[in-house]
Length: 261
Image 1 (spheres, one colour):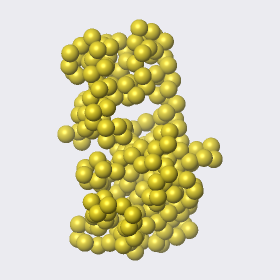
Image 2 (cartoon, helix red, strand yellow; image 1 turned 180 degrees about the vertical axis):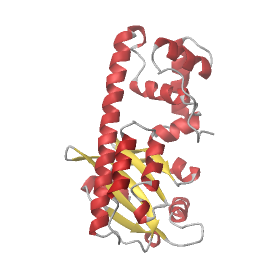
Image 3 (cartoon, helix red, strand yellow; image 1 turned 90 degrees about the vertical axis):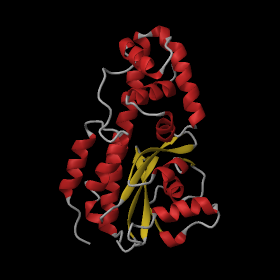
Image 4 (cartoon, rainbow, N blue to C red; image 1 turned 45 degrees about the horizontal axis):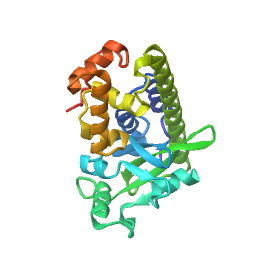
């Protein structure tokens, strides 16, 4: 395998410094530091309590993402083993786990087959921060692409960059949440989860898209949106976003992402 290009990794680090959207990060990984491995897809999961929750993805179908957006850390999936053991794990399409249902197995197997029928494989890489796993990311490549020592070092470098981005993003969110609550004490009862739902509403996301992004059920998101409207004394989603911006709970209006449908 040819030596990994350091320029792609340095460009990726510069991209991360702008605090991009998680799905934009996943896409940037494929078209940046993973180009030398001819990667087809990737996704990023962050640890939240006892679960691994999907943060961003690129190259997977909506059906796959809706089914596989939250995993118990104790699950026997390879990505969960990678998270628990702190070790990179490769998995070929032929090795579909026998313990899962036919529907799930078909979804996983189809995600590991290219459009022309070529076999692909998934590699799970733990995301480390301060010596512990805080998440895991997966890349999909052709089955015959070797993940040799050079590739492992490259994946570890990408993982470290993702870890710094996740840690800094979470610190920024906690700080912003604290500042907003101190400034807006009447609205201190709005939880961190509701603030995150509010932020995604401000991006124009639907309840389903929010549930996939945050790893909650659609009914949970609907309940949180309704509670937000009560807190903000409005009667629809658009008015909730407008009122939240007036109060400083959301940043000034920005256009929805270019790939938002």
